[in-house]
Amino acid sequence: MGFLDFLFTKSLVPAELKPEVNRMIEDLVRIGEQEDFLAERSGGSFNAQFRHVRAREIGQRLNQIGGFELMEQVLKKVRKRLGSQLASHLSYSWADIGKWVP
Image 1 (cartoon, rainbow, N blue to C red):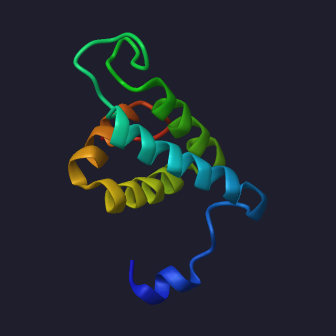
Image 2 (image 1 turned 180 degrees about the horizontal axis):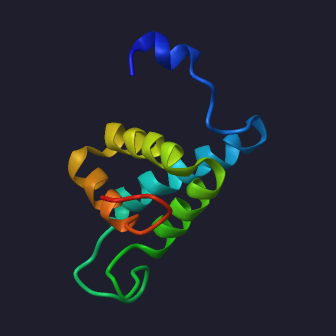
Image 3 (image 1 turned 90 degrees about the horizontal axis):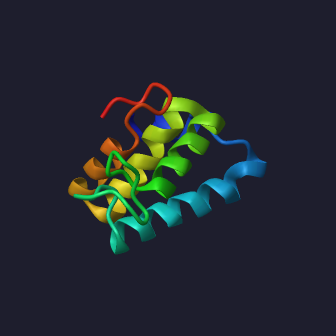
């Protein structure tokens, strides 16, 4: 997507949901910094597939709001703030949510 496309693209998020989406992005950044999105064992914050439970809840909510496109947009923001390795972990933690394929 070019710069002009970015400027003139319709928002994927209704105005009234933008604060919620921004909070979810901040939650994802915090999870990435403090816990990671994947684990070697289940338990605590991680489900039986070793994926962070809250990160998956956020992915499901993003999918409800704006589908794959919004999830992709949020992943790009997380990648910018946390780097490609943690973004890759987030992508794998979102496997099987909507149309998401890591």
